[in-house]
Length: 190
Image (tube, rainbow, N blue to C red; front, side):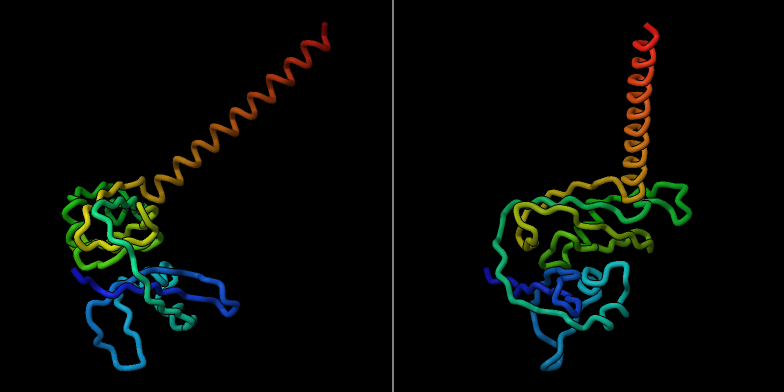
């Protein structure tokens, strides 16, 4: 079965360094000759938190035709942005059927790449997921594949976990220094 054509899109800085990269599938060409129309979901993957104005200011976009291998089984690890699935004020966890929401969202994606931002909508509220890991490749076709998804803790929760771990490690270093200091004082008193 022939699927969509797949392209790698990269935004470069003036020195030729890749700033952002994603992949997109094209089923039909409808833009005027000599121009490229980028759908909002692809633009989000290229601009992330910077917004569309950033893409206009950095017009160095390379489009490269690529052939992605087809895999019957794939794996994706995603992380909710910010506070994750919480109400706007952050006080309540939103109860959503993530499997159904993701299936609905991803049915319009031909391909997905590590680093992509995937906007999902639940009860008119928008949430964003960041693709942190893909297997077996860093970019995969989503057509006719069995996709297993793992949801990581949100960015805010991960930051809290890391802060607690760092505080615990700092406390342990302090305790270790105090043990050495106390031991040295004890030996000096003998």
